[in-house]
Length: 351
Length: 255
Image (tube, rainbow over all chains, first blue to last red; front, side, top):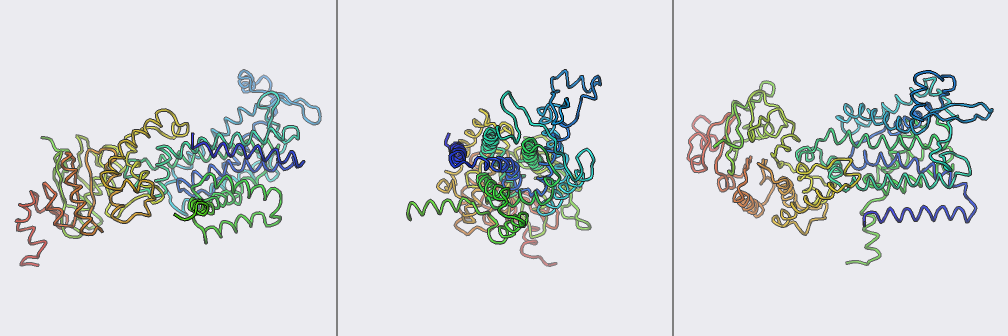
């Protein structure tokens, strides 16, 4: 169980941070921490695609938006005007229709977010598959351009389509009542619960990804990064491998987008913008590329600072500058194994 | 005895250049066959057609009773045809052991899902892979470098890693593309010893090589190419005395 030790340490840290905010009376910080956590999940997905498999993707925000907008659209349809239709009776028979009161006291019948979650995963996965099969034949910056094109397409569709709320986004997304006594929402009463739930999802994702990295498929992914020809010559179906990791990255982003949308009660087109994709790329880069822990730490740190408004007007610029500086001076990332080794030897003394 | 590999009338045109011209030969199981010839004779082109990197313009390659022309490189590897590269293709971001385990890829089945869930099968296969691979590291004398990143090894050691990687899945046949290129004399001797060891184990090897001493020492049979045409085939002693071969290597009256 040695490989899960860092995960346990992480769980401990998460609890300590929550207790610290409790003691110091700064529980409001948990809101930004929770949001950062959801962003980190999308970054972890990109870390697999870009860091481990070496496939540059500038469309991660597009998948995040697919997850968010899927639930934003599906859970805001009012079914009360559609009673008696076949669609209504189909969802009703599955027990997927819920009721809630709007702030004006009207009763609204809406689709269960559970259905939207499944839809979000399926749509993101299928989109990643459909996009990945042709696009992942490209290499290097050509792949970057193609995925960026995808991100721009998603952004323009969102901004230009009425059901996606155009430039205003969708803002009346209901809370996700996952089970009695707990819901994904921004209400103060659920702040601590949401914080822990977000970390629970991160920890599950981390365990799955750590397992993957240490498996046969994970080795094939890393080999793809090291030498695609070598992987090919050793019998790795490189096209399928790339598509698979692209789908994993997309689904993680969509799940993150889904929960973030319920947590915030809405989503806007800025979540799908190219600059958001650049943020994910710079987080993965500064985290050391093929390093999920680096991505986790830097993703938490940078997103938290950004959400707290520390970077002010220069928010996007900071991420851009980080990316430029990383590429110029530390193309292997800031948090690298070598750095840990040198710190280790520093404490042990020279051999 | 039916040969392990049968190459029939292989042709390759690059525009107006007829790089490989109706070449046919067999490789018998348990033998070492070398393809030699001057630069530009079409040796590597044949190699690339066998391993699936180029599509032949015409002709067929049969391996283990199967037609493998038209297969992609990863598919020929799945058929048990493993290769090394002239200009080393190792994964520098992986350790020695991971590079060699990569060679075991075709022997295991666990995919992405069972990898993520770390299923019993996935873990069992990893153990089996390690058991299969560790003797190779021992044999090639790179056991102490097991957890070193391949980029930190010497060129000769990287060649050993590539050889071990190709041997990892216990392949039906090895394709060695200039295995001695870039090695010093001492390392070449080691390579010759390793290849004759492989021959004793009954392995089948097809190689392209420039080092004549090495080729004459280790091969059972030699195919000589010149301008894409097979001009001779036979045992090393026959090739050494073949007039056509002497002419293309040393230059004849018309040269």
